[in-house]
Length: 371
Image 1: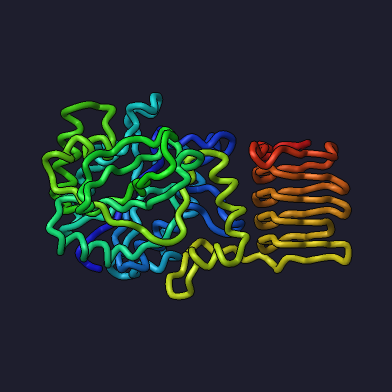
Image 2 (image 1 turned 180 degrees about the vertical axis):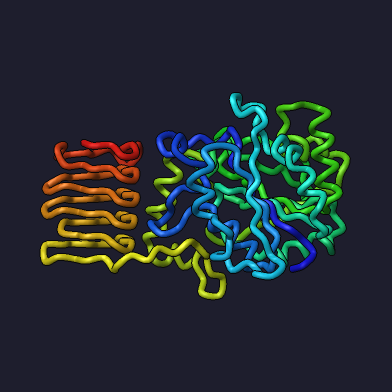
């Protein structure tokens, strides 16, 4: 798809993932032991033929920058393609000013140099698959100024809180954009995915900057609903938004189910990630593993049930891990019981023998902690 370039936007201030987020951007979160959350939007773009991709980062850039590297592991065209990492430093000390619009304005020269007539913008904190080439063609044929991707749900009272929603008319025209406050179960969740001409995008940035230094792209698009032809396109298939701690926990565990996983992963639509040359996981005679995802390089002597285990973890003899997300290089000591938790990387749990929370309110063990 040579008509569009791609932008992967950082998570806005309405995304608050307690525990994990102070250490890295949401896009850098480990997912299913092998991936990072940002792998999904970039893979969608790569698979759709988009080979000029800008990734915006506003805070804690190290882990995400290391993971992205040159971007060649995303199967981006080696001759004409490029993954360009861009930083936003505007209002770094005050998050209300560190908006996506501020990031775009700060890097306007780079945006203007792109010669493609259209832009596809996707968030770094939502997980789904979509063929952007098909969406772009639908956008062009519709004659709309802007096309927005949305997912209809009947769980909006409990999930997707603070995410944006679309109010649509019968012709799928966007009447308004508002936040989900959990006051109704049926909502059209805005997937923060935009398709528009580059000149429209630049015009929106300039308008937003004139109105308010706190405006986001969603704010200015909402403002323009009465003036521009803005259409919605429905998304089908697996979709989650990592906008709080519980959604991260639930999203990982939901994909342990093979049928659910097949609604996201497809051999013809690969999800690319940076590879890790580690040895296969070793299971000892005392190991008992059930309904779990275990990454490479682990040593498992204990029991693992309904959990996701990251690379290089050690589960000692007599240890029990249930309904938990264990990030990379974690040691679960002998006879330790961990249940309903997210355990951040490089943590050692050896002295405390029971770390248990409720499934409705899962716990978090901070990075590099010793218990």
